[in-house]
Length: 190
Image 1 (cartoon, helix red, strand yellow):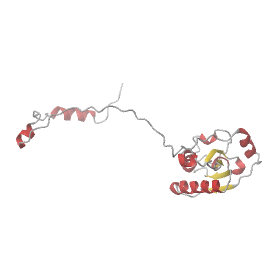
Image 2: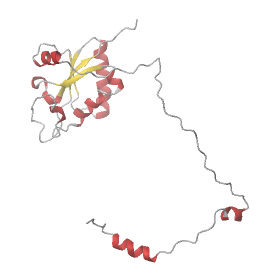
Image 3: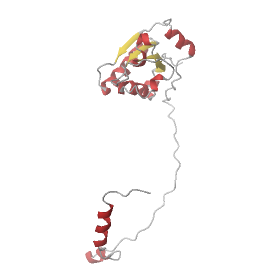
């Protein structure tokens, strides 16, 4: 049995007292003003399928491939040096995005390959809980806004041209509140 809205009975009472307006034939207003009505016709436009033609001047940025197993192991064991660190704590979302983009561009220009981006874990009752695993950064209790947005930004075209892959950091580098980011090399056109 479906529940009726609380005002349903009032609506029924109101509709019983309403009388429809007198309808006029089409064109009556135009005849009164001396203007001849324009006959209505339906115009059908030919349908053209949307085809995206990529510009030869702009290649789309490559997809993020992630970090391979060997690189992941070496980062976790501390065998790969983290060349630069960037901390987003206390930064607003708009400025965080701009600053992160600038940081990654600078890192790429300097030839850095492995950087650490610190986002923080967010302010939730479970933010101190630091289980470490392959998919732990998708856990619902870890709801830091910046932490979630950074991973979305990495998949945007501007960031994909800079980021080859990323993964949550090892607990000694910040755990769920930081990401290892692999910066793309600058390839020279031949």
